[in-house]
Length: 120
Image (cartoon, rainbow, N blue to C red):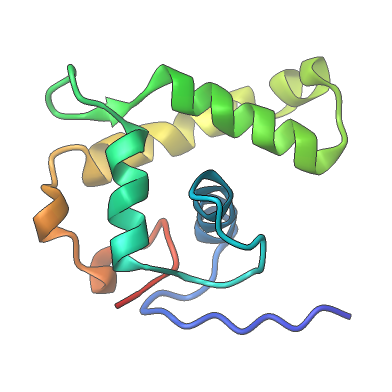
């Protein structure tokens, strides 16, 4: 059995659990199921965004990195992942664009970050 202890301001959802796990992987943190600090989230966001777009949008390379990570974690083939989840991931990345694309890093507040499990 796996014990999960997550501190944060938001209830756990499949979105924030999945995105937080990916952020932890991207930042080289332990693969544990736990929240990340606001400092770590800001570092992740620096890599997440295509800074040429205004408001910011999730970088194409980061979308591919997410697919690669998901494929590796799931054990499914690339075609299986792309056929299964591409539409759902497009929706998820669109949500990130709309929710956070115009928010300055200095204005990020863990109380309002529903897509990630964040502590101070």
